[in-house]
Length: 423
Ligand code: SF4
Image 1 (cartoon, rainbow, N blue to C red):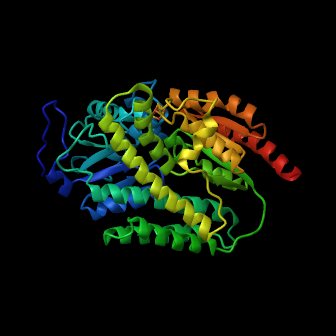
Image 2 (tube, rainbow, N blue to C red):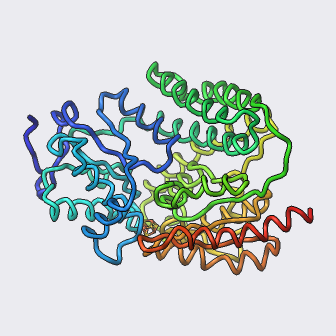
Image 3 (cartoon, helix red, strand yellow):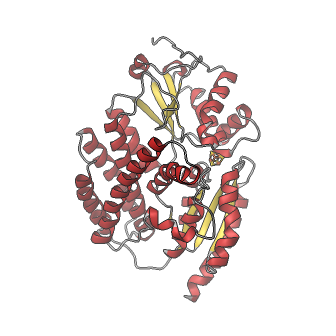
């Protein structure tokens, strides 16, 4: 059994021995992307389990072991880990937890401390917590993000975005039910296999894969019918994780809508760009600025291949290129506003509006100041500028009932359906 080792500050480390023996538990957020990511780490010799446990017990454990003003995503992730540790499904002495640290000022960088505190209070202080970050805020001998892993992960993000973009536009119209989801599963397996064989992550290989992915989705027989188109924006975890948003996408599909949730690449680019904006606005380390600029340039190249492929091989709709989302923010919000989703949240609302998704749900977690300022706080201004916009902010917290959330959304949909009939 792996020996417990600590760094000089008393932090429990994830050691090389643990890599062989332990299962790393990952809180799920975006099933397509995270399944590809999980397979990348399985290929690298890690044992990984994606957590999809949900329900009242998770919420109650989160409430019990976190401070009562903590934001809802932090509460849910902590509760999900504790629920898994006490479920009997895993040996708590043979698991580690992993959590993303963005390196920013928001609580997303401080989750790790909240989780460690909760582990100590619940008697699991022997469970190591790995920080997943590119800022080297914490390192562990048994876990490293090598360049090949990072390249595969970036490719995984963009493949996930591609599959999500296409499936969002085929699933609501498919003639044979289940065809789209079948294809999603096939492509997740296919891409994972390519990564295992060290293929699929160069720009040339991505171009080829994109062509095949797009053509396969375009070949799904679809009904020609008009549906209410709804965009979903908001805090990243609550926007994507169906457990956190009470199955929002499923609910909208049941209401007969086509749902568009913007992909993950834009958010990643926003986070990298935040380092550049910091330097340009406030000054600071030139080295960080240059590294961020290089990384952003690389992401822009991938994005370009993505967009060219969608345009060339299909008539599927796609949202704006990252850099094009900045211009409409002039007079609305400054680009230095980078806590949480920052200026990119209203930018996503605007790009949805201009691409025909005027009906928008802005998911707002309890305790999230950034989303309240940049999400709810911007709706009025956006509606002034785009009078056709039909935006509803919806709050998510442990006490909010699903019925109340769905009723708010139904009111928004009633206006949307009326407009669709008039069109
Ligand atoms: S953006 Fe909001 S919900 Fe997300 S970690 Fe920060 S405070 Fe919490």
